[in-house]
Amino acid sequence: MQEQLQKVTESFGQVSINPEFFNSFYEIFLNSSPEIKPLFSQTDFDKQKKLLKKGISYMILFAKETLAGKQALEAIAKIHDREHKNIKPELYAFWIDSLCKALSQYDRNWDENTEKAWRDVMEPGIKYFVALY
Ligand code: HEM
Image (tube, rainbow, N blue to C red; front, side, top):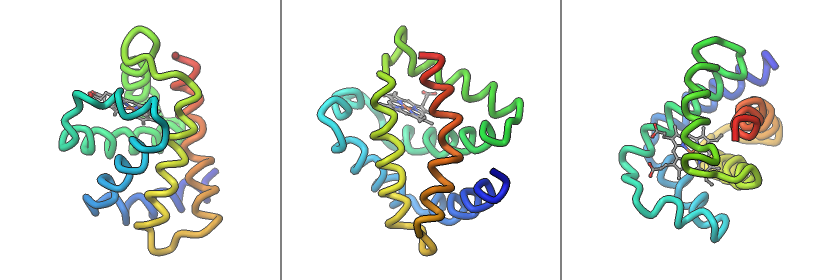
């Protein structure tokens, strides 16, 4: 996991300073399933892109097993649970696939290993969202 974390931290450092990366992610994600677009019909995307940047940072901290990561992710997971946004567990596959597609467009060093690192590092956080659903 250590090597994966290093790869992801470097990759995210590169893409997250480019606002086009977040535009691309939401473009891909909203069009990845007909169930997803309506969930964001009231969303302020300027705000949402900043929140996603923070959210991904917390996903990385969660994979590092830090308390800060766990606490922050617990609060975000709650917003997604069945009593709030009601984000069904099967929708997380669209999230990670869309994230990798957007990353592949903006990470200059993108390759199979980078994709595997991202999937491995995001997995504990995604499982946590699903567990708290
Ligand atoms: C594990 C992956 C995900 C992360 C890290 C994440 C992160 C976030 C964050 C940080 C927020 C803002 C919470 C706040 O208002 O403080 C948010 C809101 C939201 N997320 Fe996610 N999310 C994830 C997956 C998903 C998926 C799969 C869906 C739907 C298919 C989804 C739908 C939403 C919606 C509808 C909102 C509220 C938007 C609004 O305020 O209008 N999220 N998410």
